[in-house]
Length: 211
Ligand SMILES: [Zn+2]
Ligand SMILES: [Zn+2]
Image (tube, rainbow, N blue to C red):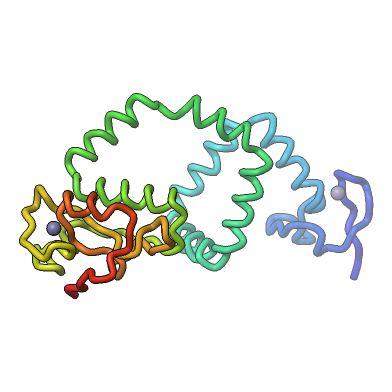
């Protein structure tokens, strides 16, 4: 294979080391791949805004082709990407935290959150329970909604076996989290708030499973 001269690094290289150029006689660019990449990287550093605009415009035009390709690639490299992200976070912790503190509007976020909490009290309570379970070191955690348990246990307290109103209802871990119980539908039963606090951290052996 005849070698081509690179006008960038002034050396002879294989034609495959050059990008294709249809308008030139030999069908290859005048500068080798490495030289072109170097220039592009340099340009990227000196003209970040222009580079961003160029690639954004390219993306807009080719979105139909690029997006599905990108999503597929992401799905195929899920695990590598996660590890890569964790490594990047560990190496750039300070920078990331600083940047998030600068761009992140704490006030707006907390207003949004408190509005969401008011609109979704059940979901919020479920999230709080997950947080508590995580803190107490539960190994299995799932999202448990009060209304799910309420309808499953048919509104009957699992401790005193009497009817519970929605305002008196609470969720009781059959095996307490502190004793290694899961935060799961299996390990959670409906109970009066009062019965629940009386039970405290003990495991009630006669607790009847109503489901
Ligand atoms: Zn070169
Ligand atoms: Zn009760």
